[in-house]
Amino acid sequence: MTGRTRETEFKLPGTDGGSGTGGGTGTGPRTGSGAGPRGGVPELGHTARRVASQVRQAWDRPLTAYYVVAGSALLIAALGLVMVYSASQIQALRYGLPPTFYLRKQAAAAAIGVILLVCAARIPVRMHRWLAYPMLAGALLLLGLVQVPGLGRTVNGSTNWLSLGGPFMVQPSEFGKVAFVVWGADLLARKQHHRLLGQWKHLLVPLVPVALLLVGLVLLGGDMGTAVILCAVMFGVLWLAGAPLRLFGGALAGTGVLAAVLITTSAHRVSRFACLGASDPGPNDQCWQVVHGLYALSTGGLFGNGIGTSVEKWGQLPEPHTDFILAVTGEELGLVGTLTVVGLFAALCAAGLRIAAHASEPFVRLAAGGVVTWIAVQASINIGGVLGLFPIAGVPLPLFSYGGSAFVTALYAVGLLLAAARSEPAVRVALEARTKGGGRFGLGRLRGRRG
Image (cartoon, rainbow, N blue to C red; front, side, top):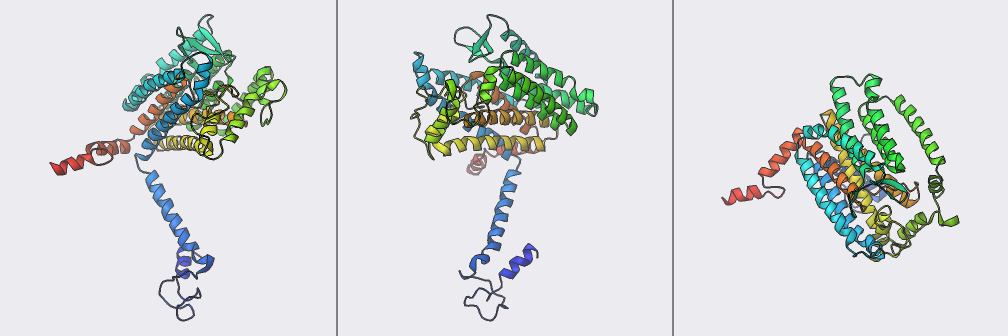
């Protein structure tokens, strides 16, 4: 029975035991509360289909993904600034610094990042492509300088920082991520234009060797989390470029063997895997950070204890403003706060995937997909580590955790997503129409009427 026939049948009167006349052969509409539980099902289904249709129509509008990317990213960054301040005050006081020390540094990075975001969103896509090789060369140079004695700095066991003098340091691996996304998208787009991607050597070379070079330089510093993200980005752009499935089977097997070797040859990494699902600190408190992260999340309840009231950040939870900022968020803002952050990331990634899916240019599709892969994988690793589902990898929560290099590059990546969206003709037309109309609220039309 079709949906239309079913709906007509249930609208016949006299079948609900109400005040209708006859035995159910009338033609008037069926009303009343005597319809029973079945009476509301067709109407409810019709309403659900109508709402779903309206949501799809809104989602398919040209500017929806553009505004969702911009709005969700800026909301994540704004909430992140609040939580960085809240989570870092005690850490700053412990080192004899002003309580706003980390907030000021993060705010400065945010100002630089927002400028980069706006510039990246406004410049044409072809300019991003022109910057691909200089960005990659710069990232490789910085990663090489990290290994120079006296220039590289070791933080929490990873030599992944480059000193700029005084308290200022940069993390070149963060620039390596965005450089690899732009360069890899440009490389594969050029090869697709010349119809070379059907050949294995053109599909894999030089993309895979350059990726392995970046991964090797990052692993020299001991940062396995960033190496995993770079591998994920490589697989992501290869998937979007149309690489065959058998390639991923072999590549994943090789990556798994390499990861197993790297893990088993490091006692520090083995100890992190031993803390998966831990509920107590264990011998020598090796799972201290994971367990206290769970304590922070569990004590927050539904709505949290309030901004600034975290107990775990008073020395119990290491790295409360970086790797485990989500745990402090859960303690202070509760389940609602943490789900809001996760929901904003989901919206950002969904809108980014829509931009990639609707892109007509290969570079736009590959760059947008690479950015989404980067943000989604890094966020998943960080959140999974806080929940004890993944080993702690030492990677920040994008756009949210403290860290100037990570913050600036993530904001530039969001600007690249916006530039990708603006490259589509329908989006350009809609933006021009909105600008001529005075923006979202139609101020231009209002001025025209007054004139």
